[in-house]
Length: 478
Image 1: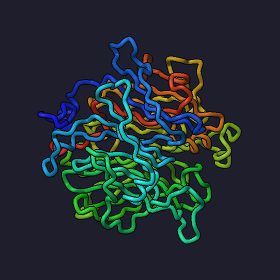
Image 2: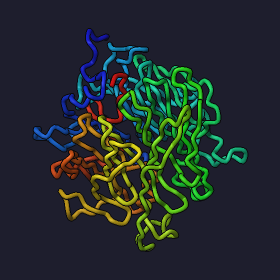
Image 3: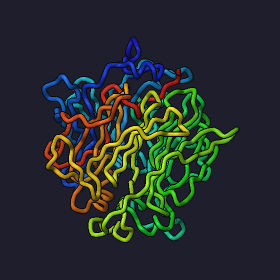
Image 4: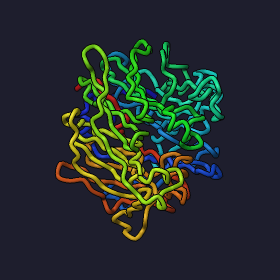
């Protein structure tokens, strides 16, 4: 049913979003690596005034097994207020939840029962393949005219061995599927002309400038069973950014970061719609195991990318390392997520390998300044949470989500089932943490530490905050 007024969680500008009321619930995707139990959406109480603060207060179990839930998103958000394609009468109500391993997409209604959201539709993999030509849906973003769902694989993506005629795997190309944000039907493939783009991962945009940006990980055969050493050392994983005409849906330019920089993952454009820059995280350099963050920006009439953060590997005793890292005698940071505060001031960088979450002041995006760091988990460190100092933790800060006002930062510890098992072969566990962030400091909230049995044997991955968060929305007004 249409609303008489726009959804109050839609904001015309980043400034309006920053001033919005704080979230009271968080939705967390949790999955069963063994594919024996259904995955679920866990609902957490994040209201500090609540008696249930920090607890799992809701649980929506899915009807199938083996989905491996990943990067889900809202059906509609602040981009619905953009002037060229306004949809002010939709509402931020449904979570669009992709199963990366099953290729199913679930539509989950949070409105009437926010702590017991209900599944109202399931898009089966056959529909996604037939109508859009894709498989392995990965990331969901709400745009003004529909839902953008990035996918790692082509219609026949099956996770088999790479074919002889395609070093990157014959199960591509990946790309973007479009869904209607009212009926949730698969509309089709977004790209009209993909140019040289083959590998896919994330997609974001400078919405007021009709620019879309995509990044690269790998096709299903390259990622589903863990890191493939031959592909990594052969520099076959993604190492490029792609720039597109958002309105015409055509590839415009690719920017190669250098094939030593393997796996270009999360994209975080400036929230200020007048600014044309953004940050991209790179998992690892095959030359020295460092990780990096790059700034994309305009350079005259073209796009360019500049490395602005380098995070070195940390030496370690080979005996303390998992087999995949023993030959190197070091722990790579493994930057697997980054997140930019809505006011474009703070960039959070998760180092899943070393168990560190770094905070940078990016007021000058070309010259980030480290302004805080915490340790938790880590391949070697196993640093405990302050609330449970005697409990060594596996995993590390992985997915990062920042509240609209920038004061609260939520992290979860699981990356992707097969990769968890490679880098934490003794078990990755399950935990979530919250940090308080301000100009005066950056540190753990000791009251908030759901872990272990709280997640019922599942591994927590991505978090979405009720009413939106730093990586949900894009704005058309400064």
